[in-house]
Length: 91
Image (cartoon, rainbow, N blue to C red; front, top):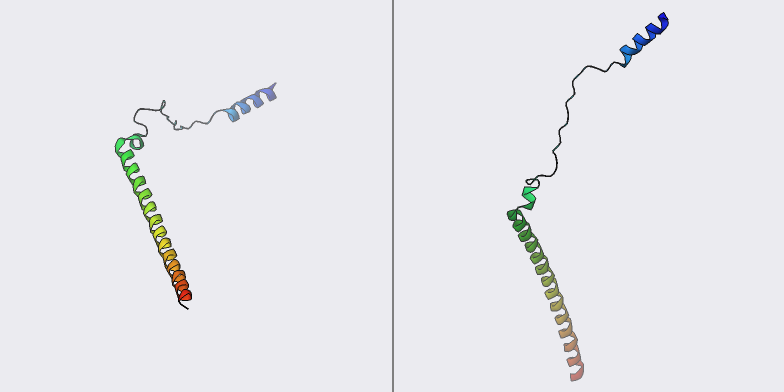
């Protein structure tokens, strides 16, 4: 019987919960009206749309410049071929 008392008292000391304080983490109840207010504001949307339009306009401008350069190169080639044909006709 004494062995049983010793083992239960030792067991009680071992399983006793530690006595130190822990900080509890707090969470919001759910989404609020102000959550993501910056991303959903009209000023932010307008700015983002303006930047997107500017990017598209710049990309289209670059494409047009490449097309114009390509057309100019093809015209030069056609002029050379036409000059060669004219020289052959004269001979």
